[in-house]
Structure formats: C-alpha cells, structure tokens
Length: 594
Image 1 (cartoon, rainbow, N blue to C red):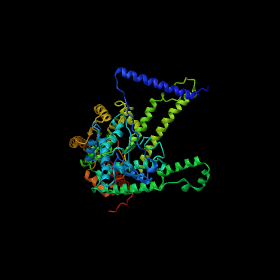
Image 2: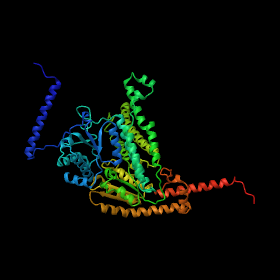
Image 3: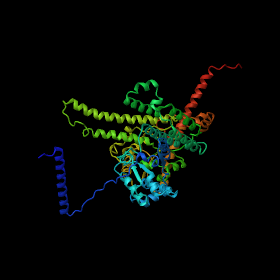
Image 4: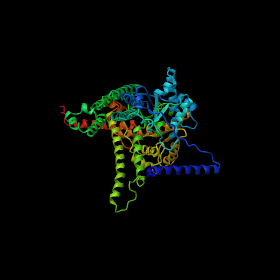
C-alpha cells in the first residue's frame, strides 16, 4: 500500500489541526456564553480594467483647481477619459451630512457630497444610474495615518449607497485590486510618460499657486493677475495634453539605435532614461517655461503696499482647498490686505520620504537580513549595514531630487517661488515638542513649520487650518501652546466646518490686526534705515519701470518678512549705488571755464 507524499500528508495534518482548534474555540465561547463573531472584511471592489478605458471616465478631486486641471490634462493626453469634481461648496457639505455617517470631519462630507452632486448632474442630463455606475470611477487617496480618514473609502461607499448609487467604484491609489487588477490588464497603467507628466503637473501647479499669492496682492490693475494666470494655465494644459512623446527608436541618434538594437534590456534602459530626461530637461519644456515666465512678467506690480505675510499650515485638505471647506480663507485674507504663503504639495512628498528615512533607523535591527551577528562575522555585519544604508541613501537621493525639480521649475518661472522648507530642520525644531515618528496628519511637520517660519522671520503670522474634530490636528494644537510660550509669535489655529464662517473670519481679523501692526513697524524701520523719504523712493521706482515687474529679483534680508520692507531696503541700495556712480563719473567730466 502506497503512502501519501510528505507534502500532501503535511497539508492534511494542518487541516485536521485547524479543525480541532476551531472546535475547541467554539466550545470555549459557548461555555462563556459569547455569541459567534463575524469579522469585517473589506468588500471586493469591481476592478477597473484596460478594456474599459475607452468608455470609463476617471473622476478626481480633493486638490486645488489648478492641480486638478493639469492632472486632468495629463490623463487625457495619455488616452484616458478624465474629469474633475467641482470645487466643494456648502451644498456639497449638506449632501455629505445627509447621506454619510455622523462624526466625520468635513473633508469627508465635502468630498462625498461633491461626488454625489456630480453624479446627480449626470443623471439629470439623461444618463441612467446603471450607465453612471458602469462608465465612471472615482480615485482617491488612502489613509494618512491613525485617524478616521483610514476608513473613508468605506464611508464613501456607504454614502453613495444611501444616495442611490450603490456599487459605484471608489478605488484607492494603493489598492491593488482597483488600479492593478487581479485579472486582465489594469485600467490605469503607470508608464514613464504618464508618471513624468503627473510629476510636472504637480510642480507646475504648486509653483503657479505660489506665484498667484505673491503677485496678486500687489497688482496695479485689479484682475490682471487672474486673467494672465488663466491664460498661462490654459497654455500649460495644452502643453501637457499635446506634448509629443519621445520614442528612442525614432528620435535617438541612428548610430546609438543600431548599437543597442540587439540588446533588448539595454534598449529599454536607454528608452526610459531618454524619456525621463526629455520630460524634465527637454528643449520643448524649457522653451515653454520661458514663454510662461515672460507672460507673467508683464503684470505690473506695486511692492510699496505694506501687507502682513501670513503662512498657511494645518491639515492637508483644509489648507489646500479653495472653497467653502476652509471658508474661502485665501480670498478672505487677500481682501483683508494680507499676503498668503500657501503650502505646496511638494512639501508633503518630501515629508513622507523624510519620515520613512527616520523610521528606517528605528527599524534597522528588526529589518536586518542577519540579525545580531557576532562581532567577528564581518560579512554578515557588512550585509546588514549595506541593506540599511542603501535604503537611507535612496530616500535621501529621492528627497533631494524631488526638491531639485521643484526649485528648478520655480527658478525657470521667474525665481519668485518660495523654496521648500528643509525637512531635517523642521524635524529638529519640532522634536522637543512633538516626536518625529508620531504619525497622523502632518505630524511633527506642522509644529516644525510654525517654529521655522517664526524664528527665521519669514512671516508675520502663522494660520493653521484644520477640520473640526481632527484628531492629529488636535494633538498638534495642544503642543503649539508650549511652542508659542517659548517663541514670540502670532499663531492662530482655526477649525473649519460647514458652519462657523463668521466666527472664524472674526478671529482671523483680530489676529491680522496685530500682524498688520508688526508689518507697519517693520516697514517704518526699513524706511528709516535707507535714510530717504517715501516720496523719493516712489519717484525712483516710477523712473525705473523694471522695478515694477513681478520677477525683478529683490534679495531677501534675514529678519525682514514683509515684501514692502524688503523692497524699500533694496531700492535704497540701488539709489545709493546710483549716487556713488554719479559721483565717480563727475571726476572725469570737463570743468567749465568761468
């Protein structure tokens, strides 16, 4: 009689053991009088497959309008159908509260309400609900940490089901069953051209948003900034959509193509490298950046207006959205005579990489391939060290390269955009108050930015926007009380919700009054330093039109936050230089005979 193979016998033994364990667990639960427990499992989502690309529209939302428009252009240029959700308003908030669970923070209410409102608009145009379910999919981000946002995908489905759109596909960026489907070719395929296009879209949108907030408060002709920026944004959309894709076989030198044609892997490496270089440093991209810079540089500005500089921080969505989700705070601040420093999404990306680098140091022993080798086993110790340092070096290189690309776009678009705050410095400043590895929201970065922008005199006031009842933001707000007691600063946290707009604007106005006083005092000191009257400086600026261009380079001076104060000091130096040059020139002038 033949015996079973060892592997089959082992599998049968394991099943028998599992049945015995399950039976004993059930007996113990019955003895204790406990009911049977049915654990929650994530429902299987219908995947988005390649066969659906021609008819399925990808819906995106949750970022600024400019980010979404440029990302949509990249999607459409790559052959996808894509559309953006409308900027969430109060009507969207009420829809989200009506169909969603209670106790959520307002990003969830605004986002799902905007989605439901958009789907109802499609239904009003004559599409059946089944057509809407089959021909649309919503892509959203996954969890940002240990807060309720980690379950918002399920909450979105719950609200959609209550609104009559049960079965609508809500797919996460990291959800492999959604983007990288288990069966068939994935519907969203991450190619080199697509990835580089998205990267350029994020950096261009970040820099353009920063330029708007630096130029518009000082524009001479009201509305000119919005008009020119809209023209440039449309041109960027067209460039990202219509950009010709670089193909190694067609565009590379013929001699290089012949040399690598016989080696498939080498050809793939050259093709990927050439596409990356073309997207980031290609002639067409450089010429387009120069064209957009020249169009923006035609806006006439008056930097002599004294305005308090307000740095916007807080929870990612609340500090990013431009509608009712944060009480339209950017527009309100500018109407009150302030200049805003918006936070680019690029900062969040560098924070994620820096956080992973810090976490790798804490996990070094646990992730070592050969844990705890003896001191004389040099090869094993070298293997452990190489595994750790290779990961750290890659993360450092990724953070440095990402920052380089962002700063390069900013330099090509006039050099006016703010540089990214260094994550190592933010982490160091925040660590005495907030542990570097405490996750959730912006973690220690929110505390670090408050200290960094205040002690370096980069702003007159820090305004932290966050959703009502946000757990990570509540933690950082508790820490900020200790920070403000150690540093002299104006810090104002504002919890945003669907209600309370009047109260929030009133609190901002009170803090702005103090920041405005700081800006005026700073301007007065700067003017006194020049030793000139204000009308003299205005006359000099009027006589030199180049000083009224937004991209005229005004050097930053440590300890001076206001744009007007920086500009007055700069003009004073220019006037002193002109006077000194005139004095030297007079030495060589002929003396008139009397």
